[in-house]
Image 1 (cartoon, one colour):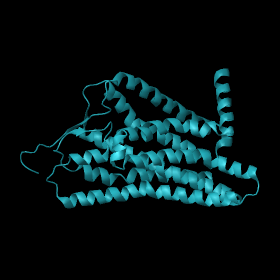
Image 2 (spheres, rainbow, N blue to C red):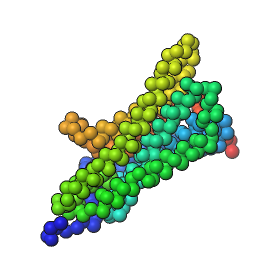
Image 3 (cartoon, rainbow, N blue to C red):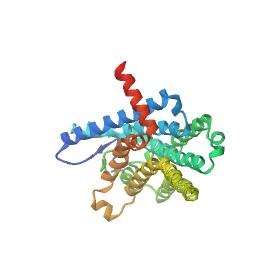
Image 4 (cartoon, rainbow, N blue to C red):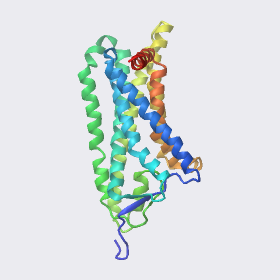
Length: 313
């Protein structure tokens, strides 16, 4: 590092640059509250009603908990910045935000993959389902997903935030995104260091996005092959209906996350990474409670029962 370069201690989050900050604060506050409420209801219903203690609903409860924490990592800070001119964030806070963003995002990818595997076993091997997918296995799978999410980003954090920052302190985003932060590293850092860091980021990205997505795709290919062999149209529709909500959730999450990190001119033209990040960080966690509840009769009955109990009590 050159002697006249000054190390940066704090960053500045530009956020969503607009003249309608108070209006956006109200909109995103409502979305955030709806997200917390919807996912909390799912967690309560699955926890309170024993007939929902099946692998599909236990995984859904874990997904809802993960999404509540996932959106809480970024949205409250974004809401705060809508109302404050001072948008500084300390280096430690930035590193912490990025770490929890990574670990919860990775955990969600793994849980979505195991939810697809659960549907594969239920449809393709129904006679062995109760032995292959027990409550204890669901617990171990969930804990393993969270543990992997906690461990895998550590090297990213240590390597990136251990570098000197001096090019600028401006992060053109509403949260500490790795691709924005790494652009602020001092020019004097050896190229070999960047190669090592970018190689690990590539490995990490493969483990948490393409690998789970390939497992999901493989599961649904096997499911599709099995379902088309069912002679009854009613049986085929029932099998597909159990997968519809999960497929919708996977498409929204993986699709928007993938687009966010494809730095092409066409994507930048239509709002850039910030707009696409809003989709999988803010809107998908809000939509998932609706996606999983509106098309599920068993869940709707449990919701009505919970509502009746709450109002009658």
